[in-house]
Amino acid sequence: MPKPGHSGIKRVWLSFGYARQGLKAAWMNEAAFRQEVWLCVVLIPAAFWLGRDLPEQALLIAACLLALIVEAINSAIEAIVDRIGPEIHELSGRAKDLGSAAGLISLLLLAVVWGFVAWDRFLA
Image (cartoon, rainbow, N blue to C red; front, side):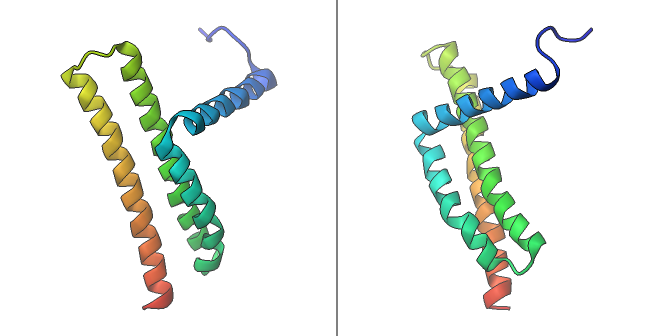
C-alpha cells in the first residue's frame, strides 16, 4: 500500500525544501559542518587545477562531498540521540562515537584521495 501524502512534482518540490532546511540547520548548529563547507569551498575549485582529467576531478570533488554527507548524517544521529534525553547511556554514547568515527574516516578518505592525486601529479 502506498504511503499517504504528496506525489509527483509536488513531492519532489517539497523534498527540495526539506533538504534546504536540513542544510540550513547543519550550517546554523554544527561547527564541524561549517568547517567542512569552507574546506570544500577551497578544495572544489582546486580540484579543477589538480585533477588531470574529468574522472580525476570528479574523484577529488566526490571525496569533498562525501565528507559533507557523512557530517550531515553524523549531525542527524547526534540530534536524534539528544532528542531522546540528556541522560548518559552506553548505546547513546556508542551511536555518537560511531557517527564521529564515520566522520573521521570520511576525512581520512578525503586526505588519501587528494594525497594520491597530488603525489601522482607532482612526484611520480
